[in-house]
Picture 1: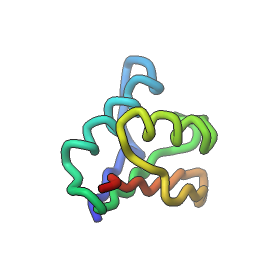
Picture 2: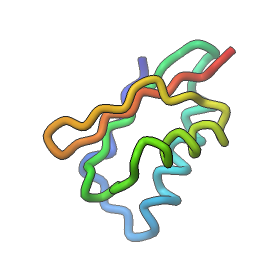
Picture 3: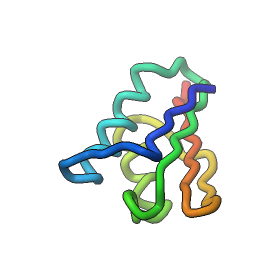
Amino acid sequence: MIEEDHRNITCGGDPFNYIKSVIKGLYFQLDPGQDAKIMVLREKFPYERNVFESLASHSKLKVVSFEEKDKELHIVVRRDF
């Protein structure tokens, strides 16, 4: 599993476009059937699961789990076969 730690990033731009590009980039890093965990802070990325699912599906990925832990979001995505 690939781990993408974006908890302490400082993006001067739009956080939506930032996370969109992170998810899109994962498609090219993952092999079919492989998972990746994305870790972000809830305050910087105040989106609900459905937003992450939509972004993932546009990049041909699937959200396998979505957990909130101590003001952090841990989203696991999988590249389907």
